[in-house]
Every structure is written in structure tokens, then in C-alpha cells.
Image 1 (cartoon, rainbow, N blue to C red):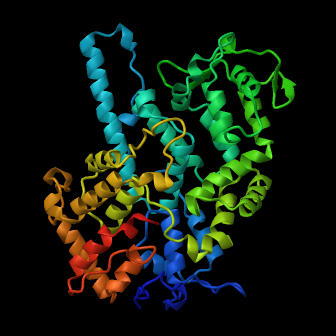
Image 2 (image 1 turned 30 degrees about the horizontal axis):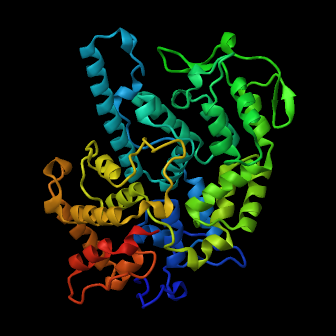
Length: 481
């Protein structure tokens, strides 16, 4: 049965008729199965959109069952092969300052090529993964624990950090925080490698407090930053392997007073003292709320989730389950209130319609950069601000132009198409439309599948499925989730 027709206002989720799957276990007493809109909303916020089949597969479950299934199926490793060079030594054996001008130029060109290849690989992992939630959370942590290729200058180290974030994406925040503090890309990005006794560098310590744990100006002072910096002295990386190393002779082992506690603290001690602060769970929960629910966190709901998060020992899955099963998340009023990031827009479109782009092609990273999200190169230590900041008059026009390009194959550069794909992008869209027609999806049904709220512009009157689809994809509502 097709999704509900769209009226002048927001779609009514309660009118959806669901097809229950025989293999789905009976719901617990008092539990209610998701309707089409609710299943679509859940998959949209935890992934990059969803096909009609994916929505209908989830719909017979209750909200709790559906969320637990998504968490249970999350991956810790990618499904696509990373570039072969990621297995090579990350740093040149000869220091760049000892190289000739030609050698340094060649090294820079090689790193630029690897960086673009690495971004393309992550785009394709997001497209191909059977667990979109894993990649959404990897992307979330990438914007929380920011590092940038432009500063690190080593695609190898950024790849290793990407793998670290994926392993811990839905695991334990305590373990993730300790691992990130030792991550070589982070050590380079925030200058911890130059942090030594007598000359402490405060960059990592400041961001640890301000961005990673407590939040800007929340319960710490300048002395706490300075004392934390002393605790992380001696943390660095091996010149040839790129691995974390601790250098005792560069470490300040004196007494430090941090957040009112004194001792011969090292970096791990500082992290553990921070994690004893209730504010940490609140700060992380607020960021998760903005990612999954709305840009204006509900203070009472955040306090409730943060309490469970902290009581669990910082289990990220516990925090996510609390958020995704909350009354606030299920409120129809929050649907279509968040703006898709450029990565979400591109990945979701290619993934939905199975557009035949080359897996190693550079089209998506280049488009993402034009739209303001240069993957693996956030603008600063605070990351991409997200939300409505993604939309300006210029960026909205550019987003429309990009959708024109992706939906009108004649506008796609030939090099962007998969050389082994005999059919063009037109064929991909036609095949997709054919599957929807086979499922009796009419124009309102297509809108219900692809748009979180009613279309701003009405669908064309003529009976042309391809043009109807194109108008839906060009509608401003398609930019929302």
C-alpha cells in the first residue's frame, strides 16, 4: 500500500496503513508499531534517508525495538576497501627539510592526491554501508573531535583517526576520549607534540575542556587549562611509524591542581577527573540532541538523558537509545526541522537512487567542498556549525544546481560515470521509478518517501513521473530531514 497523500499542511502520520512482516516477533503488550512516517523519520535522522523497502521493513517494530535493532546492527569496521596506500608507512623516512625542492613538491602532490582519494573512499563507505548509523556517528565524532588534513598533512594519520572514530562511534565515550587524546592526528592537529616540560602548549588542553568535555566557559578557568597542559607534556608520535609515544624526559611530573584536585597528574588522570564532572554528560548529550532531534535542546529531556548516560559509565548507545525513543524525538513537530549537511544531501541522493558514479571518482568530495563541507577538513577546531548555517542564498542556489546536475545525466561529466556501468544515470532514475510504480507509488507517495514535510512547490499537473521526481528533488523541503 502506498504512503499517505500529502495535504496542504504537514502529513498526518496516523493514516498510514502498514504491511506487517510475518517474520517480525509480536510486539510487547502495550507497545505500538511504528507508522510509515515514524519509521521514515527514524531512518532519516540515524542515516542518510531510506528506501520504501527499508521503511516498511522497520515499520512493524515498536520504537524501542527499531532503535535497538539499529544499534545492534551497527558496524565497527568499514565494508569497502580503503586505499592501498593506507597500509604503507605514514611518514617519509627523510625529513622534508632535508629534501630537495623537487622532492618536497613531489611529496606535497602525492599527499594531495591521497587526501582526495581518502575523502572519496569515505563518501563511498557512507553510500555502501549496511549500517548508516555507524557512518552518521563517525561523521558526528569527526565534527566533535576535529582534525584537518590541511594541518595534519598526513592522509595516513587522518585515515587512522577515521578508523578510530568508527570503532568507538557507538561504544564508550570514556574509552573514546582516552583514545582520541593519544591519536597521532589529534596530537599533530592540536600541537601536543610540541608540549614539553617548561614550555607547555595549551592548545589540546584548552579544546579538551572547551569543546570535547565541559563546553566553553563551563566550570573551569585559565589555571585549569594551564595545569592540564602540563599534565599532557611528553605526549607525542614516533617520527617513522606515526604511532603514539610517551617521552618521560619531556613530561612535567610536578604537582598540578586541576578542578580543585591536586596531585602528580598525567593526561589520563586529567581525563578521568573531567569524566567525574556531571557537566560532561550534559555537554555531549546536548550535541547529540542537536544532531538527532532539534537545534534547541530541551533542558529537562537533556538532563534525563545525561543522567542515564553518566550512570551507564558513558555508554554512547545508552544515550542514543534514550534520545531516539524519547517523546521529544517522536513529536511530529520536529520532523523536517533540521537541514541536511552537504555530505548527507549527496550521500543520501546517490544512495537512494543508486547513481552510477565511479567509486574512486572525486566528484562528491569536490561538490561537498563547493557546498561548504570539505570532508576531513573542518573549518576550525569548532568544526562545522551545521544547522541553518548550511543554508544561505548562495548555498541554496548551489544546492539546487547540484541536484540539477545529479538528476540530469547530460550535465554529469562523463568521467564521473562508472566505466563498467552500461546504463547512464537516466537509467538509474528510470529503474528507481519503475520499482516505485511496481509498488504502486503515486506522486503523493513519492513525496511522502522523499520529503519530511509537505513540498513547498506543488508537483506538476502532468502525468510525468520523471518530471514529478525531479521537482520533488529540487523542492526546498528535500534539503530538510
